[in-house]
Length: 118
Length: 110
Figure 1: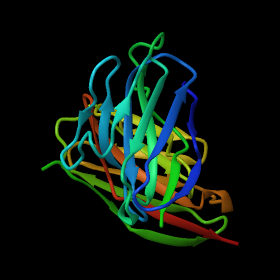
Figure 2: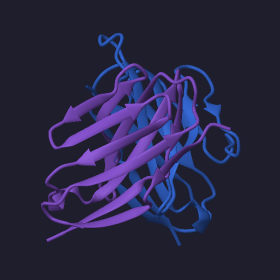
Figure 3: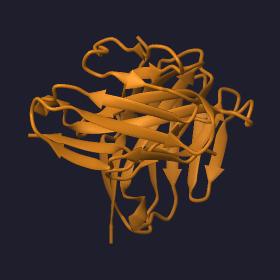
Figure 4: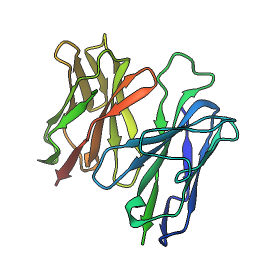
């Protein structure tokens, strides 16, 4: 299995500011993803974080708004830029493909970061 | 469009009772179907995972069934506990693509 930690666990931010969320995994993984979960809703994929290259964004999400870094196989960051109240949500890091555990569907989710934008 | 629909949207049961949550999907083919439990303010935690060839999978008091012909899955919770209060999400996977259901919010009352 993989243990995922996210920082911060929650934050309250002012409109127009930016917040960077960190995701740390205790194992090397091939895939890292960022999801958003708005209140009462299911998860929506924002992007796939690619190591050493630009993230792959889903429809409706753009790099200028959600820049993502992935410098190695265990760490990624998601920045929510120029925030507005509509960005209030839970942001979840997810990983797949734990190295050393081949053949298993090993998608795991982090505990999430609860963001409130005032 | 691939869809995963769950029912009911919400459910209230008394502690100790059993309940069954439903998941209907249109994703076909698919690699596997997974049920997650998500406590309020937490990330989803996997309960069961089934490939298209499996019919049932148990994890303690949780039993998932899968009927690939009718494209239906269910999650049965036996002898519910207060700690079972959470959202339960059905997720269908095809290669690297996940399709999430809207979830069922379960509340177990004493």
